[in-house]
Length: 392
Image 1 (cartoon, rainbow, N blue to C red):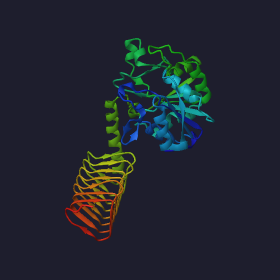
Image 2 (image 1 turned 180 degrees about the vertical axis):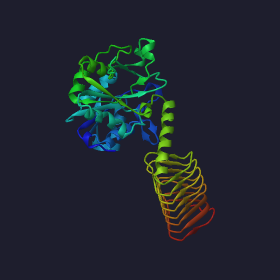
Image 3 (image 1 turned 135 degrees about the vertical axis):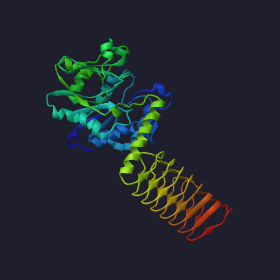
Image 4 (image 1 turned 45 degrees about the horizontal axis):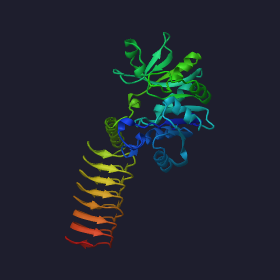
């Protein structure tokens, strides 16, 4: 949901970390969830919220991250470099150097794929609702807050500090259930002043972005907390968390398509870039990947895998067929156990049957290859019948 009042807001997304626990040579934010890199989702949340500018702070794997961002978002997203990973506060300072004509800054992390537009917009808009506030921060209460930075309030209930787990000093602080999801909004001048004040006075010897809270308290500036969904907290630091977040995302995607008028059976896997027509049926065990588009009233039966495939209306993809980088016309039948390899165009009402494999082949309207054939680099006209055992 786009918010007009965020038109002069820059989203600063921190994505420079190495991601040691991923145990990978690839930048953490380029690991895939439902077909898109981790960093795609917070960027999309910022753009969907209506932010006029998005700056991504890059560091480890800079070239690969910048290449992806340019390809996926073009001029909508710019980058800033954190040369040395010295904490989130240092990353925010690096990003601030790239901020241009913004009135307000919205800062959050690049490894939180379950973030939505309203999650970040609500934090920014809290400043409009509280004109005396200098800073707005997301908060969330958990039964088990272990591992998260705690929101520390004074006797009057005002937020005065965020203290990281490793810096908690006593049982009273460890018992605090209100934690920090990591979304901050303030004016650009406030961020410039508060970030310039940061010192590495913590167990990690790093510059903590969270210290801008205590800076605000020392300056007697009001900090407003914004209640947030627990899913906003779900960051990805290792492969276990990657898979857990992806499972949540798959469920979210399936539920959205069900509400839009598509039957999606339990166990189907539909990636973020896929589109589905009304009354389509996606059976259990199906994987729909990339930019796949399934037309109205089409059926993709059990166990099929489609990657970047356009499927026409009323077409049936029978069980355990694999299709890649191809198009299938309307009212066609594919499978079971068919393999449609890249660059194939299967015409309307055509049939590709049991154990038929095609590659770089055009199949005309109503033509049939019902079983046991390999059709490569060819053109088959309308109404042809290809018998079993045919190879070309």
